[in-house]
Image (tube, rainbow, N blue to C red):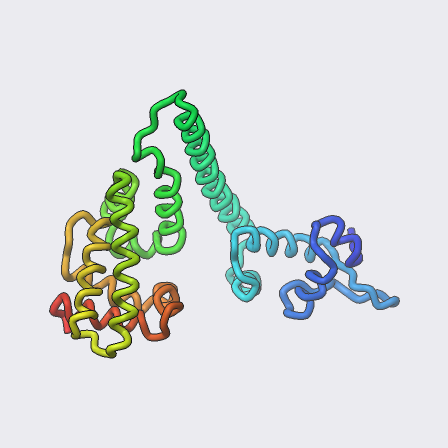
Length: 253
């Protein structure tokens, strides 16, 4: 079956402007142009639009979607299975948050008791799942399943006080690091204070501290662009500065 722009917008629930933009950037071109000058989309384009909408729903940027879909290694069946798994993860997280809200309502109305730990279960599970999605595969290859599972269990079992201390430590580390960056000296007192706060922060997840592992994580901040973007969004060059400060702190530089 073939569709004009108007028919496809009604079918998929997207705007005509969106379809024209997708055509302009080359992510979804019509199958042909009719003699009247109308864009015509066939089954292949309909299926491709569905894939694009799946990825957009999962928060993937259009440049990344284009790269994925135009890759010679793109496997449609595999992609659909990955979509399903990620949607199930989202559903599980939402179900947990809904249960948490329901418990909180019952607790507020005095119908049940709710521990401090239970109040934060949904939020901590979200952190675990996001970390697994972004870095899980690399972390499990580098450190092994046991260490990653141990780290997830530590986070999940944190008390309210421990969780709040984790967040305070992370925020203090970030602020101290930004101030240290202004000095330009990764060996200076402020930079070393930031490195020590970073040690304290990762120990929340690891349980036990290891200098070699700490130095390895610091190097990863420079080697992996995802980590680099996370730190450099506050200040370009911050990831490299933190890496240098931690390598000095751990005696590796």
